[in-house]
Length: 247
Image 1 (tube, rainbow, N blue to C red):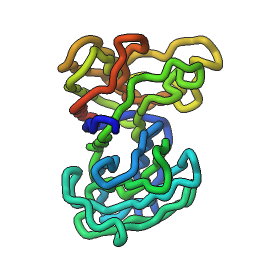
Image 2 (image 1 turned 90 degrees about the horizontal axis):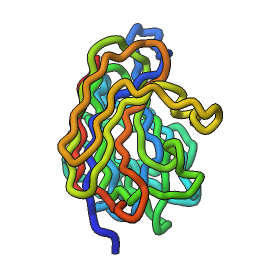
Image 3 (image 1 turned 60 degrees about the vertical axis):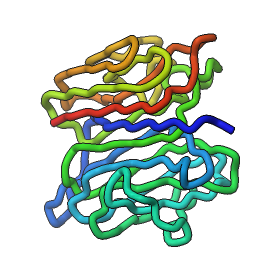
Image 4 (image 1 turned 180 degrees about the horizontal axis):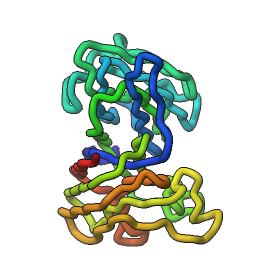
């Protein structure tokens, strides 16, 4: 039985681009990559965001794709999850709309498998640029080649990019870690492809709490990443809280 851990991440990142509806309401896209999902309501991953319309479209790419995923609307990141039977079942790779009065977050409840990984995309009317993710269990880093270059650890991007000041803090119980804002093609794993390191717009290493500040530019892709060194001392991180503010 894995120890329950909480990861709360308030995210920011940037990639050039963006959408605007014909009505003139701009849309925001939030990417949450490499989420680790475990069965049960108590292990649900939660994603918070600010939608101006009370709805969001979600696409969740699941591995294995046989996992059953229920997406539950929440009025706050820490709100009680409604009965799973009332939540929307979302198939892997299928775009679905989640709508609810005072929608401020969604909970991802997986079943039918012992564990699953998910890449999640949320698209919604721009109601603000504060986002958050809470993950009940964040495993120790995997040392396999497939997990290098952010291939397995969670990271987050917010599109479209906006110029201005960004800041984030992180606290947790466990070994040392790294909080950083990377600039470059993190989604495309360009470090693996080219060998050229990403630009670190901001970075902090060591024991918690950590904090970073950066000035974001609309040129390029940015990803907010929390990692820890792999090796014998690596262990799951407990009660992790990462908060951020960006333009």
